[in-house]
Length: 117
Image (cartoon, rainbow, N blue to C red; front, side, top):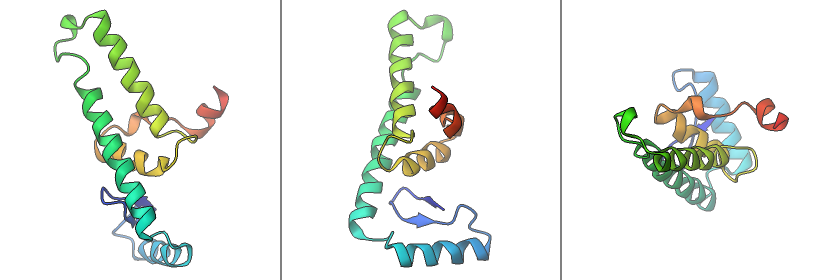
C-alpha cells in the first residue's frame, strides 16, 4: 500500500487485482480513509513536495558555480527530506510515496540503515 498526493491509500501495484482488494479491505477495517487521516497525509505530501522543490533548487545547475553556502543549503534540504521520510516522522509513508513519485526514491534510507545510525 502507498498513498497518492490527495492522501488516499492506493495499491502499490494498481495492476494487481489481489493487491487492490487487500488495500480495499485494509482501508475498510482500519478506517484509513477517514477525512482526518486523508487531510493529514495530503498536508504531509504538500510539505514534502515543497522541500523537494527547495532541494532541487539548492544548487545552480552548473556544479562549478556552487558556493559553499549552496552546498550547505543542499545538505540542509537533504537532511530535512531524510527526516520527513524517516521512521521518527509522522506520516513518513506518505513522504516516501512523494519522494518516489518525484523520482527521488534513492533518498529513502533503508530501515536498517536508520537504526544503525
